[in-house]
Image (cartoon, rainbow, N blue to C red):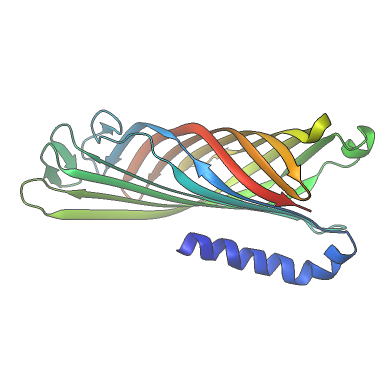
Length: 252
């Protein structure tokens, strides 16, 4: 619920003061919702416990998750805004005994890893790129903050005891994006977010093919690659989530 509240509040915060600009054609808005089907891989460890592969030991597999984004281009010197949310929740069963902190869980115990990601970006378009290419090419650069809410839960298959641990990690990132408008309503887009700081390293790459269907509406599909390394509050994870996505949206 809170992920959609995040989007709604952000839309209201951006759109209400910019409504008069939109009437003058000075604001460009693009929003989309869709589904992301990542394959998880990598290692998970908590507080010196077992370092386990999320596929072969924790039992996670491909899942489909909702995703939403909102991009608002504002006039003059005001930075443009890009908001995105991607909740993921993987469930599985341990294939062998696993030490989660000080607790040891038997094989076949239930496992769950929840990652809710919120991206808040401010960016500018590189001047004159659009003019020089007659509007066919766009290039954006800026800053992004990803707030990562991570929660791990295990329920023992014998005692039914459950242990839950969580952490919230804000990570500053650089943002670069490019757009290439083709003939026939097609466009190619790429977005890269990433930075390596002392407690976390996150790399996010998105490639998208977009097609304008009718009026302001479009459909899109592409591939997304997420690398998440966190060493904070006893969490030590090195995870990758990669897979295709599809979305529908509007742009005006």
